[in-house]
Image (tube, rainbow, N blue to C red; front, side, top):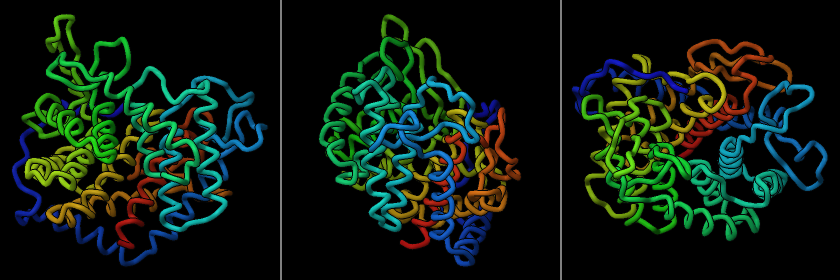
Length: 384
């Protein structure tokens, strides 16, 4: 999991008040964008991940595609654990690529992957984790007709389960998983984005307001991981960890709602979050910290995805959010390892990537998806 920031202070500046750090990061990012073709780089990243990780289910089942969780793979390849939400982000990245440069072969892979996730998951879209299903819902929703019959089947099932996950304990919010005492940002943020895009803005707003009131740390302005709920419905503990992806999903929810109901609080909260992210989580160069392999390999890439959304849809954040995306993309690209089959991204974007091998985070699909997702975000900003 990500690093816990033990000492934080209230952000001192707004993103557009002439802070020289914002200006420097933005200028660096714009220069990087002007000097290179990020769409070309995104295509290179895509090919590397697809060649190494996208395989038939079980290695043999015709008409299926699934993401191999490590490369080089273990021999024999383990059947468990099943990384459901990694597959959701693989699907989301393939949708990014299809929107960037449509290809018939990729479209077929998207439909096959969507089908195969359900098949590998026991013939259902659901599991115990509300965050898992929200992530898959977002990917299928973005994929639309590319996902074939999966969308009409998946989305109503997933959104109904998310409604079931909301209770009034702790003031509201969706559980992290069923039969648990934890309400977490990584379940509520993607759920709010999905529901807002599905036209359920009132429910999405209730979730996002709960996050703002319960999970945003009043000192740092950053989103804490979640709260533990006592049997009487009170909050018995706050999990204070400040993971990068929790910032991204809260930002994404605010941006989505700002576009739908126009209430100023969403824009204000988005601006405050980017300011806090820049000052308290990113380094002086704007680069976000990594969170190792495993699930943490996806964290910073998710934040980059929603920073790009903010840059494109919130005029007040155009420079600051885009500058952060480009600063991270340039660092990750500079630190990549070039081996047979294409680039390998580092789990820490500032650091050179080692060659993937057993026990190294860079062997994880999650880490490589995080890098690919980041480069796709930069490509989207450059061509828009």
